[in-house]
Length: 342
Image (tube, rainbow, N blue to C red; front, top):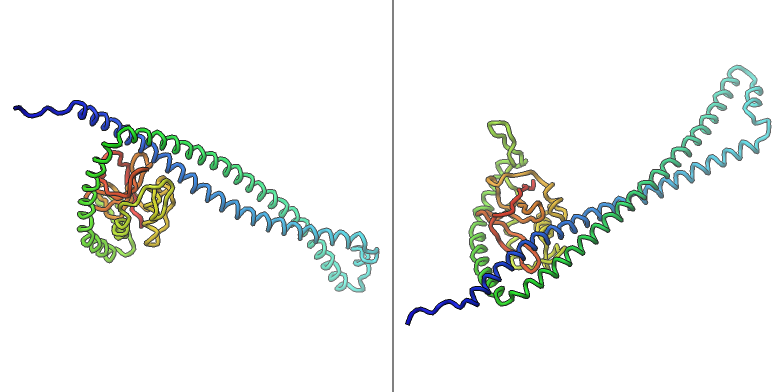
């Protein structure tokens, strides 16, 4: 009896599953862009709210200054209009009994006149200041409204893409279980390899810091600057603690991370603040070439829509996308660049 032929229905189902997974992968990349656009809007909104708080405080100060200056001016005007003729400038000068007395009286009159002019000037300055602060506040409110609208649009996009993703996943539920089992085994092997490299990486990082404590970049023969050695290779060990943590949209804690929330949280453990946005994180530190990557470097993918932490061996650790967990992946397609935090 010859060998049994493969069940064509199984082969067809596996082919369909691969096609659906390819669609989900493309959708996940788009979804991560939407999540990071949402996170970026939140970062902008927090900045605008800080600006508004400062503008409201400065407006209160300006109003207080204006109120005091106007009160001083009003009091001076009342004093002028209620004074008798004996206190007029002319009477004061004509009452001089000697040349020295006349000069002293002239100086006194000029001083009062100068104080009145200064008070008038202060009123004008403080009034302009109040108007400027009000304008700043109006602009901040307008910017806030725009960012809130952007955030709402990003949220709607995320929710729509999540619904589509769930629908696709439900169509290949049985195939997913087998794929997930294979991925768990692969992740266990990658994690073991990464942990085995940690002692050597930590020693190398300490040696590099000792040789270059100020983090000064070296110069190539052509005079081009290269990134100084990484000071934060130790974040790899911290990041590894969170392998298996679920992806959560907007998450930035051990209960769940999105990609930039994960890198932000890990670096916060060594006292380095990063913004909760992959786009904003790309502006941190200094650029580093792929050939010069060191553990702890931030690596970016898919038009800056995704970020992770390089761990050595051509791999990085990251929070990939909804439905997944913090894991180790190899640097391959979609790579954009890297930044070294100093």
